[in-house]
Image (tube, rainbow, N blue to C red; front, side, top):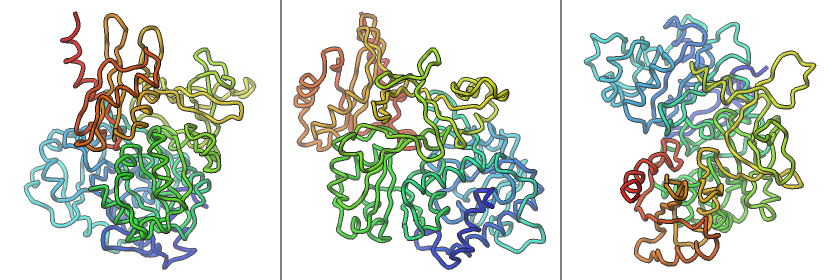
Length: 531
């Protein structure tokens, strides 16, 4: 029976021990070898006398040891906390202290950058370093050991932890924290295992697939690339993203069959020269983390003519919620689809009633993918994790659902359409405006690579609309043409008051556009212009 996340590897190792499980740079490891290394790592972690539920932070780029460390935690009954490798020491220190991690797995170079932050911490007891420790930590409150000495040698301690059930904590994923300090979403073994089963089912993943894992493992969609692959015994290629051209090269080198990206990355990839070798075996491509511009989708379908397009919607608090069947893409390219297998998606009005077709409401997710809440944050947990609105009154125990904060609307056939985030919706001249409607028109010009529409405070309008964009071709860019298209396609109240051109737009650690950073950048300029 599969209970823990690590059990996925054990099951695949029994079915096909010699099949390739992971590739990282020049290293490829089989399922049997991966299972052995997970057992060794779990035993080593238990030698540290960790208790069930203790947190282990993993601050590494994508490599085999990163996966072994996370799944070794799973096997040992601990909780792994993947830390995005692009985060700065201040943010890493916050995560370690916020979840009271007792163990940190990292590299020597990364440990050097963290010393000042770790010196003020209280929770950390052990640092496991890949390679040779840098030295200089002898007087610290934590003990430094090499990863290989602890986790890659035989042990007299069993790796498996007794008493683990599927509803126990398995991982904590920290959101980017663009509106404050990052918050940790607590996922159970059940969340992760059921999520892997559900996603691999609708994507049709098999042991023949070769999946390129480009997104950060600290991002729910990035972690899902690994878990879905391990669930079916597929070959997962770990990619530390550098340049868009690297993605094309890896797709060709490993004959990739499945690729999932967020819209900003897709916007870059459509501008690459895709070789026949890079697209020949692509079976599907998928979008998550925001609405994919229709122009980008059309270009991707031209690049991958034999691949099925999957438009997905998810949130960290429920891992994945909806997807659009590729057979419906031509008819409903703007839809986020319907509920994934083993999930129920409701559209709920402000007064708690279930909305009918054409009536906007908040997307509410119920089922086994609903996370356990936010770590050590009862107030925010109570705001987002609330009783399901259609629970029969005769059932005396509550069922918690995730209230996403996203506004959606369904059509007569039950397909859902994203309207906007409650906190991203622009209120201007008495109207509520979705930023994505403005951004879509900008993308349709073919002149724009990235676009973000914002509402900035205005004494007369409530909020004035500002569009920030980056040109697809700086030399041939025509700002006047973009403005003309906006005036042509949008009602007056939706036309941006200003269009700001940037060479690059800020992104969160998960690769999404950082709207909060843009607001902070533009607000001082805007406030000076007020009467």
